[in-house]
Image: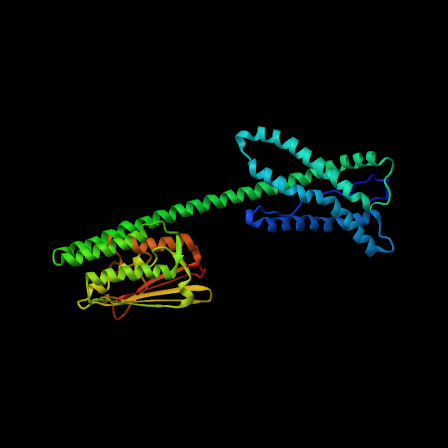
Amino acid sequence: MSLREPSSPKVRRQPKGIRENPVGSRGADARRGALIIAAWTLLALIRTPSALLVNGLPANSARYWVLVFAEVLASLVPWMLATPLILRIAEKLPLQSRALGRQLAIHFPLGMAITVAASGAGVLLMQPFLDTTPGSEFAWWKRQTTIASFYAATSYISVLGVGYATAYFQRYQRRERLLLESRLQALTAQLNPHFLFNTLNSISALGYDNPALADESLSRLSDILRKTLSATPAQIPLAQEISLVRQYAELYTMLIPDRIRVQFDVSSDAGSAAVPCMLLQPLVENAITHGVCRLEHGGSIILDARVANHTLLISLSNDGLKVDGPHRDAPEHGTAPLRTAAGGVGLANVRERLAVLYGEEHDFALRHRPEGGAVVSLSIPFRRMAA
């Protein structure tokens, strides 16, 4: 750190802190290093004008400005190297009220050692930029290091404070992510028994009339359950979700042949969109159970998916009975003819999972069609996902 006696013509420097310095993961080490260098370089730029005012501006002021900036920057290079260590200390020694005394006892010698070492190295690095050093070089170095260390204590405290703030924010993010994952797992777990309960009810009713078809349906159901109950990520590509819905629709086509017609119209870019696992199955189940199955001759279900303005737009329409009264948007939990069994677990589950994952960035609407049936429309941010 460039610090001089008042009587000396040489420049005095007082480090006062740094800018923000996020501690990233291992993959972000290069970016973190660049931010550290940029922060200390910015600090050197801020200190250079004060150093120029202290020493006065000679005739060749442009060249002198560069030299003073280089001197200030050189004195801060050791702090660039020490910053990752200080941030690591903040990460490994989080503040705890019950152990505050012990932590201060650890921080004091660590802070003193780092401050003195960085200040002393900074004095050595800025020395080539000086014209002369008064008296013995070692005595001068020792005096300048002592003075610089007192001023530089604020630098250590500032970097440590940034480290504590960053570590606290990262721990908060991890805790929120774990809570979110736990909630999503609980919501997804609700769908499997609900889906199994409804399907087994339909197969059991078929068992008395057509045991062979019921047996084949159970085989199809086991294939679907093998996929849905396996370790599946919270989000999958829409194409994979469509594949599961196709299998489910084929199973219901076996249970009630010639009454269900399912049409998929999915654009190529929409197929790579990331969606919550089992997003569409509850919607298709609702369309079959409370729409098509209530018609004497069955009906059609049309699923449309496309991408527009970085948003995934999905529409699911189905034939069904007409609803008396005005045709308006359904309330938050749907209307009775559009709810699934067991109190609307399917639709309510879909709504809550979308709210957990996307917050205000999603939209979910369910309305009756004047000619009968219903339309479910939803939109979520488009995020491409590899198959």
